[in-house]
Image 1 (cartoon, one colour):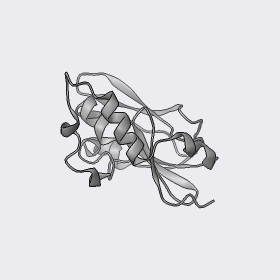
Image 2 (cartoon, helix red, strand yellow):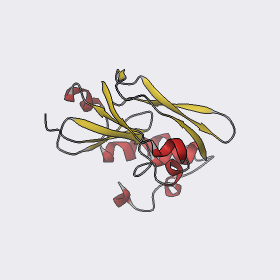
Image 3 (tube, one colour):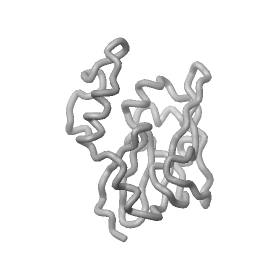
Image 4 (cartoon, one colour):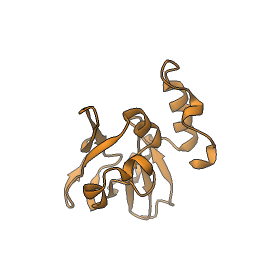
Length: 146
């Protein structure tokens, strides 16, 4: 199954960069900025299976709050980013790059149809932003970042 190397986004602010039959999963820059400094990342275990939207891990921030990380697609965890176990701060600096969470097999490419592409996600974020706390310019210096 070749899924054409695309990046998709969830309404709960996870991303999946889709490869041939699996995808790399992480949290978006937007949600990392909203959460604040992440001090701990609970990773899933290799071999565990998750349904789409099921929590597969969590992040903890400096004030002690925790937030779930949801599976963007149904599948089995193939790899985890073990660097985050020793250096969770990496996710603060590169949530959509080196701070990725895991690699998951993709059981059904059809599930990806419900996820947003970059343009739809940017529109979704704009609608969701609360002017009281932040505005669009706080998150996007350039659209090319996505």
